[in-house]
Amino acid sequence: MFSKITSRQIFIIFLTILYVFFLGWFLILYLNGWTDTTSNRVANSYGLIPIMGGLYGIFLVARHWGGKSDVGQAIIFLSLGMISWGIGIAIYIYYNFAFNVEIPYPSWADVGFIAAVPLWAYGVIKLSKATGAQFGLRKSGGKTIL
Image (tube, rainbow, N blue to C red; front, side):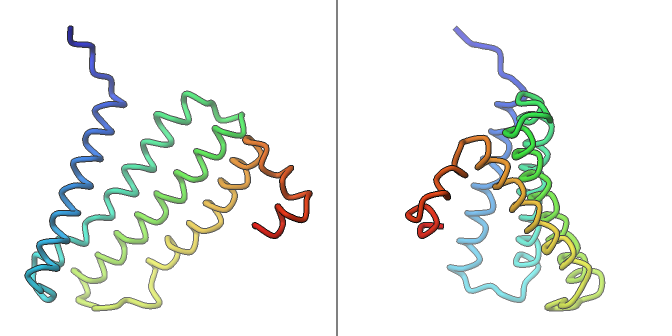
C-alpha cells in the first residue's frame, strides 16, 4: 500500500516546501508594503533554493547519469552554476547584514553571479550535444532561431 519514500522524493518535497514558503513570504511582504523591515531581510535567504537545487543536481541526478556522459556533464555544470549563483546571493546577504551595505556593487558577490554564466553556458552546450540540437544549427532556420 505505502511505498518506500526515497531520498530523492524527500529532497523534492523539501525544495517544494521551501519554494512555497518563500513565495508566500514575498506575497506577504508585497501586499503589506514592507520594505525596510527585518522580515524583508529574512526573505533574502531565498538563496538557499539554488544552492539546494545545485546540490541535488550534483549528488542525486548526476550520479544516475554519470560524469562521463554528455547529459551527466550538462547536469553537473548547470548545477555548479546554480550553486555559484546561490553563493553570490549568500555573499550579497552577508554584505547587507554584516556591513549594512544596501546595494553592494561591486562586491565579491558578483564573482558568484558572473561565474554562474559560463557554467550555465557550458552546461547548455553539453545538453544540446546530448540531445542532438547542434545539428539544427547547420541549417539557416536553426541559426535564425538561435
